Image 1 (cartoon, one colour):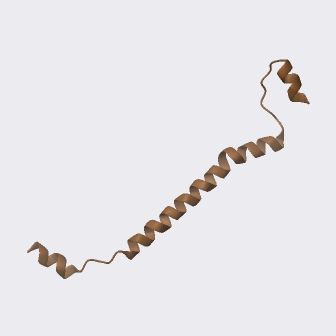
Image 2 (tube, rainbow, N blue to C red; image 1 turned 90 degrees about the horizontal axis):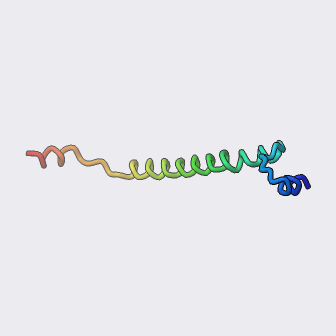
Image 3 (cartoon, rainbow, N blue to C red; image 1 turned 120 degrees about the vertical axis):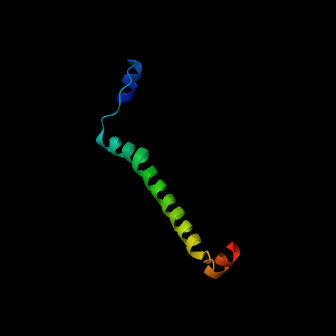
Length: 67
């Protein structure tokens, strides 16, 4: 294989194979991006549920406590 010749010649070269480039790009950028977006979406949904679950404070009680 080609990589054995490069080892013997002590050359370090980046692979120019298109399929490898697509695979490497997906694994190092797009997959982590999708994971982060999914996690942020779950955090957003959970925060939104917690905000909606809070019971609104009665207005009369808040006014009476300040007097």
